[in-house]
Length: 395
Length: 67
Image (tube, rainbow over all chains, first blue to last red; front, side):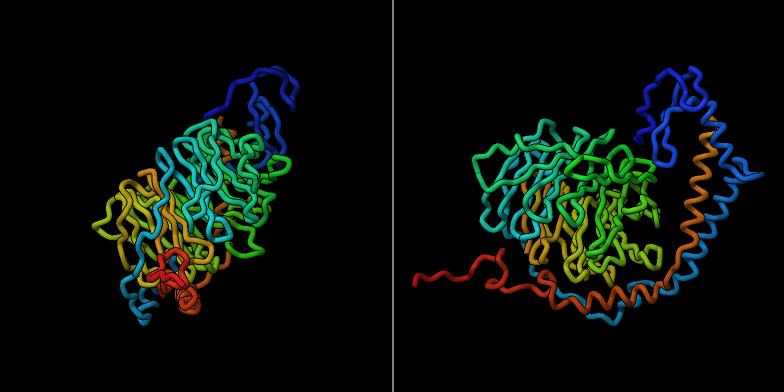
């Protein structure tokens, strides 16, 4: 599903040799160019140092992969749950559903909390995006998107705007006004354009930049004001399903997970893929940073959630049980990082003890798959969105 | 098309070289740090310690009396 499959054939003068041939559009040092296939081949060979051929490169890549495995295993001296043996076992959690938000007429696909800890935005298959006050259950704003399946939505850090997108391949930003009668759709601003569906979006530390991930296999950083593409991140070989920004104030890394079973950590300024983890057996549906920023968790269709430590550069824990056979769709950490809440396709939310690797409790309530789950900014509650058309707040 | 395959392979090798060169920490050290973070912040975690009805805005009040 990468954008290479969407190339249309154009015919015309090549930028390099000026002759008329079928053209390929490629990027050189970030600049777009259209070259004919002969020039592309010539250029590719120019980049090789003496003696490098496809065969030698393949051998080198295999030996490097082996070396990486060895380096990672060398440091694997103990398991996380062994280190955590002395820690007290957690008692039963007194968590249950405190609010049910009804109002969507179809599957709720995504939700996000506002920094004021009481508002949240949710988007649904019916094309509607609703801003709720979670304390009073009031619906504060509602927008109807022109496409159905609004798969991603995000609240701006200032609380003054929301972003959403989905099958329309775009991400648009709506400024929220206090005037209830104002038509939100009129102020819509198209910010991002991808060549396939938008799977996730998130504002960075300010309202001015938005990070998006898409079914076309790329992630991109956009400037909201000018809708300019600031940086694009290539590396996934299939749809990217989720992304999460590192929690620190100065952080400029983010993690993304996709259908190629990989979780990649990226540097936002250079666009470089700094670390990559491939231990899941199926699509990675959701990734979330640990509160300290030194680790992240992922949820996958292989029915497991895994914890990866960034400094040890490896997977350090798997959260799985033989009785859990349905894919996990979303995860989030509690504020201290001790609990990991995961939503599954079997309609339940499981709470895991991050350190010991055991399940602390199962939360029942939803009547269909959980599509999205997020803990509130102050950690007092978490919200789950489901295909049963409702959202539930648990505390 | 062998040109683009070679280019792709070269990119893969460069990426692997980069990844192989990063500094790594022992798992025991990393795990100890994760555990320390959890324990340090455990008291401030409402979902872990369970807030009482009066302090948690989402929990319903037990008794409501007219003054």
